[in-house]
Image 1 (cartoon, rainbow, N blue to C red):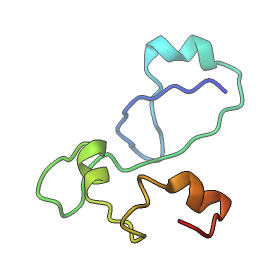
Image 2: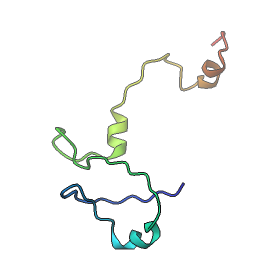
Image 3: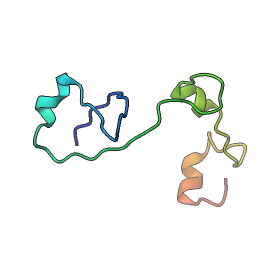
Length: 77
């Protein structure tokens, strides 16, 4: 699967494909995923890594050191 990412402004239900991608996509069936590029309610733009640092996971304290043992189900962990 080849992926092309670009930003466009929607107007009257239409998105303009940038000229550099038009020839490549002309006549092809494409899958379109729309993501609002504006961050809602955060007060500013955050990078993906900034948002990922905010993710919290619950698990055993030694999960990072013994993750393989937990995955295969070793009981002596």
